[in-house]
Image (cartoon, rainbow, N blue to C red; front, top):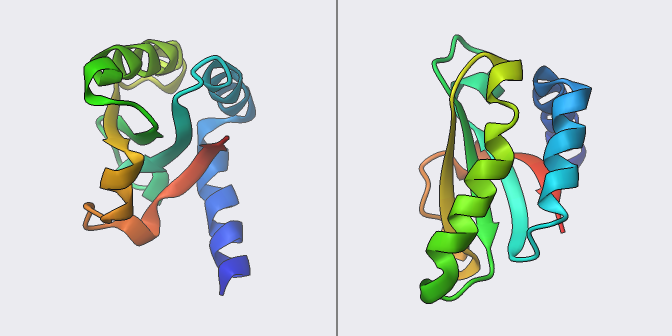
Length: 114
């Protein structure tokens, strides 16, 4: 079952395009608080879309969370023009993510892991 998930994830991730994935991963390396970046929503399900949604899981205290979120948003903004749609990012701390707050947790597509 895990193997099937990985195959679907790769297929969904390929919709971003190799250059965009490479750029996202390269930019993510410079944000040390970023633990994981997932894709979600209609774009990653292969449906018609208005934006491209990401979930960023970070290790950060509340005081620096705004700054970390802004750096992540700036790094992803670079691919908006390439994708032809705005990028939307939901920032969750690791403890928030462990509570599985999203309805579609099982459909998240791994884009970057530290």
